Length: 103
Image (cartoon, rainbow, N blue to C red):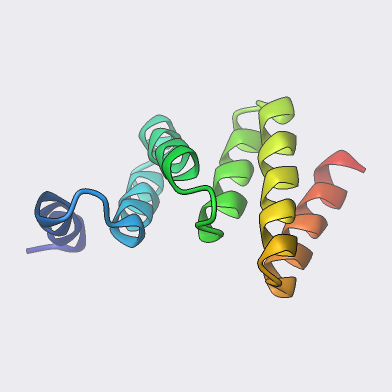
């Protein structure tokens, strides 16, 4: 069983598992399937806005698709969540992404 098959199997057992949803999105990115990856990132963001790992990759892939307004919104939301949960490292990473593309 390869990595993708394992993640699919895990998601069948527990479809709400955020970590495995995130891993599945990364697998889609490895396959250059950005549309499916973004769909999963969006689902994670929508259902669990406090799941901080999603913000950076979600925004970065929106930027790659030139969906700049959406990307900026996601980055700013992620900074708010990181700030509210005292996750300084995540806040700094998102702030750097914001500065890099939207300064």
